[in-house]
Length: 130
Image (cartoon, rainbow, N blue to C red; front, side, top):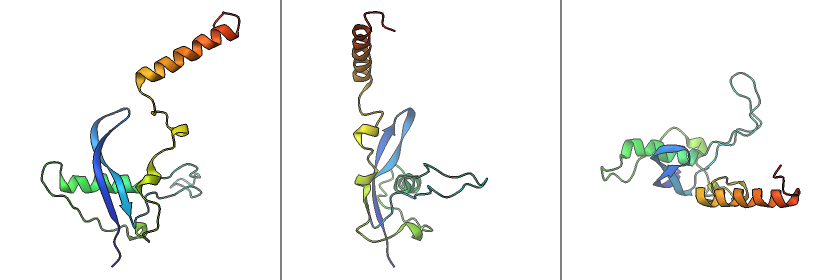
């Protein structure tokens, strides 16, 4: 039997309270289920749908393990289609590149960047700010 392994850790999420387990390592597991090009139940094309199944499996496994039970391992069955060779892209491929990451800066930094851009606009259009 071939198995895949996901190593998980707890983290918070933007725009959400609470925490969930997420994949920080993966071996022999497809971390994404690429559904782009398929259709949904209503026949509409799926254009951007690519669930991060490694994170979904990590979160589901944590429901069984529990946060404080000292149970470090859960076995998930029923998704053999996600198990593959060890040369599959790992959890590092989950991290969004900085140029597409809308949360790469903190609130204060984003405010400062927006303010600076607004000041530049004022000078570029003759001081009107519009």
